[in-house]
Length: 111
Picture 1: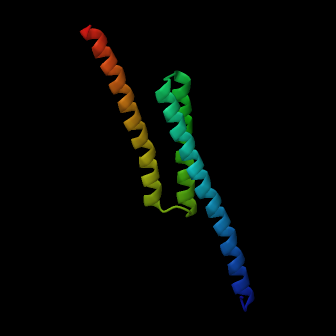
Picture 2 (picture 1 turned 180 degrees about the vertical axis):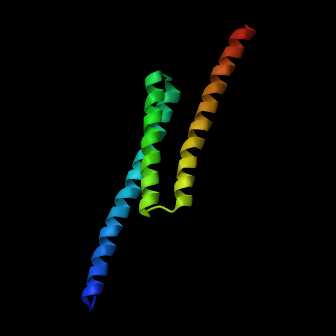
Picture 3 (picture 1 turned 90 degrees about the horizontal axis):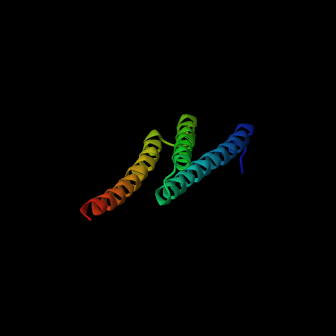
């Protein structure tokens, strides 16, 4: 147990910051998951609305990651890694989407 007023105050501040950091990290994880599900839904059935949903989800995730970095919850390299992970996921899934559509197109051309 703390012996001085300042130590008691530091304990309270540390607890407040821990809860705030936990909320930021949880929100980042949630927004990343929403982005991943939006991309998977778009790959399953590509539509303009799905593309708009992906862009919105990416924007929200980037914003929350940047705020967490600015606030000190996430290290800047961790934030960069998370952003990179989002972009790589889109590139990989869109590449498979293009490969499957191009293979169908080439099959139609060959027949």
